[in-house]
Amino acid sequence: MTTTKLEAVRKTRRALRAHRRKGQEVIEFTLIMLPLFGITFLTLDIAWAIFSKATLQWAVRDAVRYGVTVTAAQAGAGGLTTAVKLKAAQLSLGLLSGTSGADNTDSHLQVHFYEPNATTGVTDVTADAGANDPGNILQLSVNNYQMFKLLPLFYSWNQAPDTGKITISVASADIIEYSNDVPAEGPAP
Amino acid sequence: MTRKNSRGNSALEFALLLPFMTTLLLGTIGAGFGLLHNLEVIQLARDTARLYAKQAQNINFALQGTQDILVTLAGDLGLQQTASGTTPNVFGTAGTGTAVVYVSEVLYLGQNLCPNGTASCANYEHWVFAQRIVIGNPSVDSSHFGSPSASIINSTTGTITTANYENNATAIANMTGVAALPTGAYLYVAEATGPGVSVPGFWNSPKVYSYAIF
Image (cartoon, rainbow over all chains, first blue to last red; front, side, top):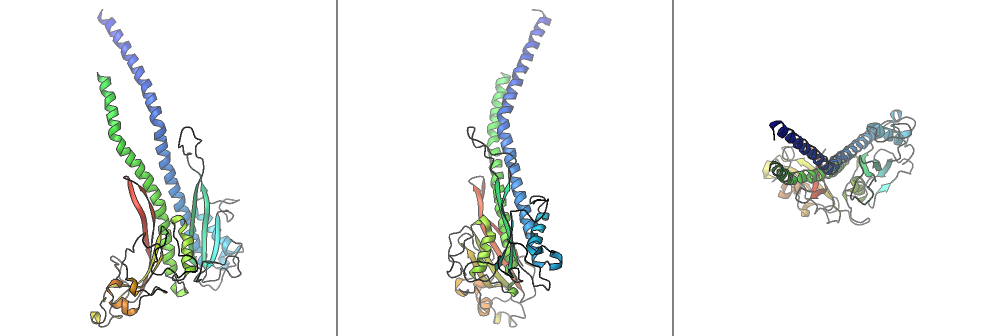
């Protein structure tokens, strides 16, 4: 065999080997891709859940703080509950939205009024007249907010993926400050 | 020969890397869910301390109606009050819940409260507890600021008498690092502990704790 022929054969072998190796890489990548994506999206989902919860919690806390000090003139015609819900929606970075963007109509938002110091059980006075009298407690909550997952959870190859949403509930409460200009209660809860 | 070698290499590398990757992943999951619970106890401690500090407006945490408001705030932390209608849980009958809230009124015994110094106040120049109320299950966690003896806490109101907080050694609160307030001024402290997340061997945080001082 001459040198040139020998070289040609070597070249072909090299090419074949490279080709085989490339196929193997594709298979390896496919094998690793599923767990890799799983891990990536799991991390993203956890971060997304923490972000949503932190944002909603901050929104209700600040809205309650606003609610216990707001005057009738600032709260406007809708009364206290409307003003507080609107504030929470505006602070929620778009997570809470009603019929027209950040407004007070998001159904997850609820305002309750409690009378402190009952000797037995909690006294929910939301439906009573004068529920928002100074000295009572204003509680704003976001109940069962449904947060979508970025990627459904796959538990097993032969089961349908879990596309259910993650439920988040947050609440904050504070005592209503004394004021010369107490706002109307507004629609409850 | 070379190809065989490198194949063994990658299997070995994968085996070496696997424990680190698994630790990293399970740690991330544990830390993530722990963080979610942490957000809840921070909120609970803050809201409690803020309400507790409003004693001028007659907020009384020794009463069950007020304690129940905290239960609604605690969400899924599992804060449980003693059954409705029973004596308020002032210094902590062990409940079955998974969370606990301690509220404490703390003051500094300085010159104007104890003019004779240690002669009349054994706790002179110390932070002391003037009230301690436990809401929830005290076996979840003890207070990080100290535990006044149950014998000096009034079982109905949670208050500690002047004579007791001036002289009883267990009334001393460990408030290291808190900037000094004018003597006689009150601090309102709320501590909340709830369940954490544990992924055995990878992330261990069986409880999450937070406190707020007003």
